[in-house]
Image 1: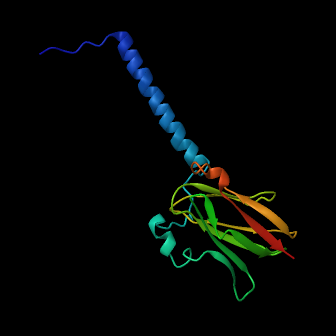
Image 2: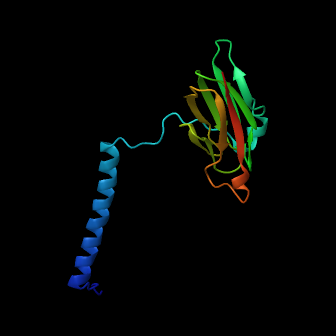
Image 3: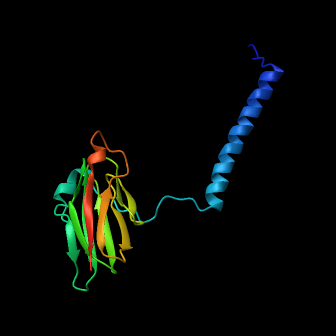
Length: 159
């Protein structure tokens, strides 16, 4: 029976590397606990293969509820937004619900703070108020393919 001989310097390197790994793992765990890092708690998901047949997203558009609230349901897909033209009233909170059936897209209403990432499999939900009437350009700000630069639509805020 032969005992494995480990040189002193090899042992020091092994201990040093082990201590560094332990320190990194401790820093991650302590940092996550102290800063309350956790996954988002209210993420809404959707099967990307069923977006086109989903009861909410199959017919995207602007909907006004009986209480007067306005909901925009939109789909971002290869090189286009559906609907292509969105008309909403000025001075009223507008809730947007968006998803994508294919790849990662962006939805940015240029000149406003409406800017969201639209990921396949997830529903992006945000509310924004457009205080002034006008016509806004809507762009995809996430590279989504060769014709990404052509992915645009319009949003008209009516008085």
